Image (cartoon, rainbow, N blue to C red; front, side):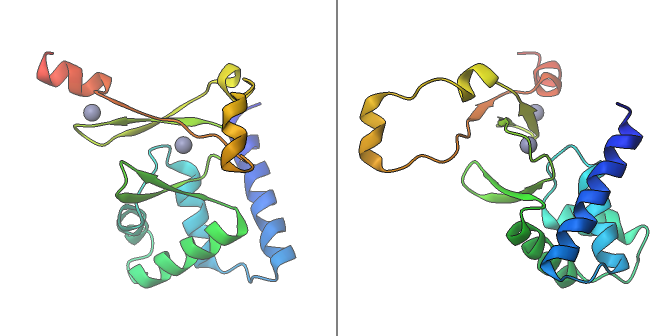
Length: 150
Ligand SMILES: [Zn+2]
Ligand SMILES: [Zn+2]
């Protein structure tokens, strides 16, 4: 499957979700969604806003915040809190984990199906019902290793 057809599928799904939720598909909402979809770097709201300003100079940061909150409620994007601080947005809804660079704060997707299907220790039952698994791994990314020479 090419990237183009995948993008078309994701856009169609997005339109369908908005339709079912009774949310009007405005130009701004569509552009915000497209922007997140095309960014693989888990951008923060401020970064998304800055990128959108190139196409829509008058877009307000509040609009971006509000739209992202709506998308999050609808399950269109996932809110991601890395290193316990920054709120980032992820349009990749497939089960995956994250690697966070402690130096440049870059976030990369990691897939680990074996981990996802591992039977959890019995002792975990004590906490309640586990519904999802997410690992956050920390370290130095390839670029930072090159730059620091370590
Ligand atoms: Zn880095
Ligand atoms: Zn991700």
